[in-house]
Image (tube, rainbow, N blue to C red; front, side):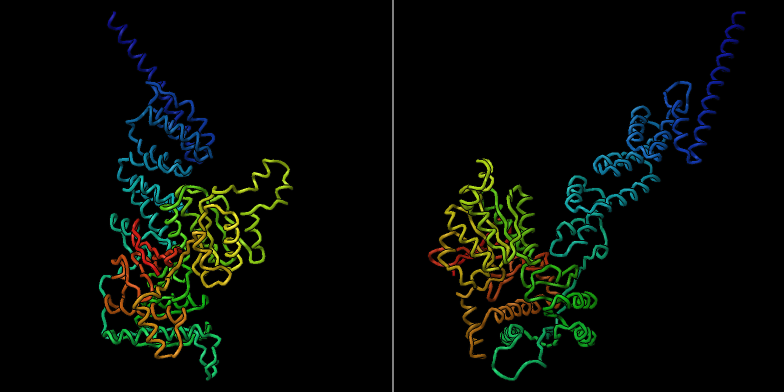
Length: 587
């Protein structure tokens, strides 16, 4: 009898549990129907009673999961995240935990919590879901426009292929002069990516020839020149050509065969387009020019399409290079000058604040901001960054020298202190302008201040009559001097004598540019072949004929920026060959 009673109790209990389970199942299916119909608010409410963990409720994990998804789709990602995290904690071994991690990863990505996203997505084991994870990472990493943030993330997660691809894409979109070529190569090699996908052109084999053809696309303006000895309106173009021609003669004497082809662009787009359509131009080994910024894009496209190197002798703006791996600047770009000067200050100056003045041109602005970005990245404090208009150079004196009138007008001692830059409170003044009034105002103000501030400006100031050599020496001025010509040398003497013999006049700076440029690329063609960048990428320093040297290792602009300082014995030239290494010579 007792056995029958126990059996009856167990049977009634099972019926009760079955009834409860059937109620949970019915409620779950009811909630799931709302979910499937996209009625997520109703689904949330229906799933909510099923969430508490109960030994008789087999739907708790599922209800929690779909409640979180419904909350997300209703626009409550924070609520969804909390529920997903609860599922991870309570049901860590649940069969669908990979889906939970995927949703958390997406939510973290949307909130730009990239580290949390990467960490949670790494826990996913399912091969099927991993394919979706790859697409998810690729989508969100590609939306990051901050290149520095991508670099920071890559340094933390160097094994993340999608992150590395996004960083490589970001690098490839920058102008070549700003690209980190070493980092790009590291990423391509590590993940075996296709270089062409990132505009990286790999030239594996040098191309040597008995004779190299060089096209000069200059505004010769031949039809407008008068047949007399008076100075021409485009004299600087003719001077550069004479320098190039002299270098070709010099190289011929050393067994280097170069053939010049001159094309008159007349600074005209239609004329230049007709030149570029000539079949003979496609057979050139090098193009020099053009001068006009309007023609740069046309020539760059031609250069890229036909894989012909092009080098510009005068320009310093990185737009000349753009993203064309066959385009080069004889000069350092404005960005490179700014960064190299920043490197010098970081290594050699006190950590006192600095001041930046720059002129009205685009080049001045780019140079100044490249410098500012570089030093501030290393925790230097730039307290004033001021654009100076040519008719408002008085502002420099107002900043560096506070007038008695201005001080008396101040309402309090605190206000007076805000106007004043105390003596020896700043380490340096960086000037990005060749304007003579800006330079003279800076020098005058520093001399009046009488403190230890160092002034840094362009070597173009040496051509101005407003400031004498003694002032530079007395005030410890430093000038940045791209492609500075060292005139106290045997090589310069030989060049000068050869030019005077041929033209009966002394060479000017444009003749020097033409000669040094042609000697640089002529020797490069002879030593490394048509694609001389193969050799340049291996050289720490390329010898300059008239300059201290050139450096194009992993770059398309010249990375040697000589620095001039002034001593009793003469001008001292310093230039960086590699990190923390400088060479010096006197002139």
